[in-house]
Image 1: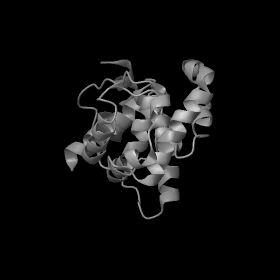
Image 2: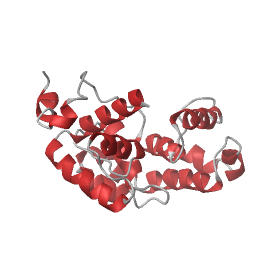
Image 3: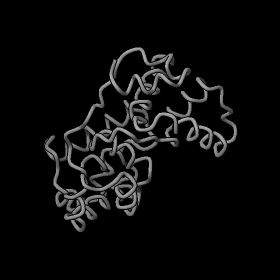
Image 4: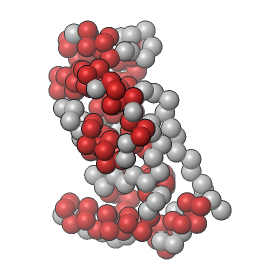
Length: 200
């Protein structure tokens, strides 16, 4: 039994869904591209987000675009692949920030999770959830909890019989429960997502 499974099994409720060990699916994308992808995915289901992201990459012959290439792409062109005007501007904001803060981006592996969140949420259109996804799936951080994630909320509400009517109270209870999962909260999230997808 892996160390994280042994630890998370101390939670009797979570233990029921720890059926099979999970590895964190770490992307090999750059910070800038990962953030752009996350912006595209905001408030969209996975399938629709993947279609729009593929169209976005088609603008650059399906090669990973540089930040300069993205900045040089007209808003109208970005919108033509299905992006809203707001998201098109957010993607440009990501590109501009990653150029301006190149040194900080290069040293991001040396920052704590909280420092990464503080750094990247300076970008317009990039919120805490977006950075948490980057921490998990690009930087491979093992102790990230995303209480604003709809899937995590649904899974925990169902498993722990939490009231979903008051979002503030729901999030507070979720965070309290997740304290027991430290330092493996990312793995707990992965299992919650998998359980929700299998149950829906």
